[in-house]
Length: 334
Image (cartoon, rainbow, N blue to C red; front, side, top):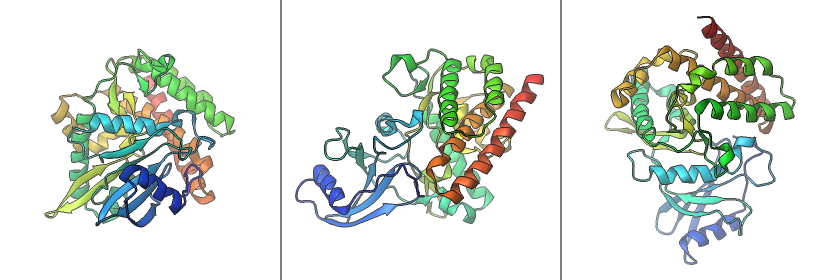
């Protein structure tokens, strides 16, 4: 995916970073830029005696990003550290450099995950195979949600953005993205979005414990492998959009084009088995709020993509925004 947020390094610069990680004696064989990502740059590097690693480079400080996206790589590293001893098949961080002394970017090296992305294989999978993969994913969601935060919202050291209640955090999240959208003169139903969020504040206040949420477990961030004729999740990556909030948001991050999450009954049943959580109508309404938030993000971020991708994503996300608003307005009348 081509995006203006990606930082492209020369092979000489990458070799210099490898020396910082592996030492002067490192022997680089091949450097391959990976194109599936949509925000940061990533390189697969083979070195020494058939060894491999992944290098991930953050967005340059002078590149235009959305407000919530600033310094996101530091959130990703924080979450990798939290999950290091868990069953979640996240990569291991080998080396990190946040000094911005060698290059004006954060960067880190990590282990290479086995398999291919679910996105690249999805059309070849049967319905039962997809169900099996999603049930595995739900187990990893449940493990991740065991981590409790001390505040609601995105990871930050700014105490003014560490919210005591979930409704305050959600309001702040919408305020940020809508401000970004207005700055870019995006054509969105701002008043309708703000109105339905304000009207549903009482539902958001019901969430009392801030849980660790990835919010980006879409098919492009999930790696799978066929092991003994069964597809297994062998990796989950890109936790930079994580925050502390409502576990229901995780379902929106994976199923953002599905209006009624009850269509994914196998995922809800599996989550109940792992957590004993009993889903309610309030959960399903909050799901729409998180879908709405994600769709506004997807619409607003299109400034950085090429013309054709920008057009398609704007059309799809705006259609979903209208649908979410409609569902949320209907819920207010019930």
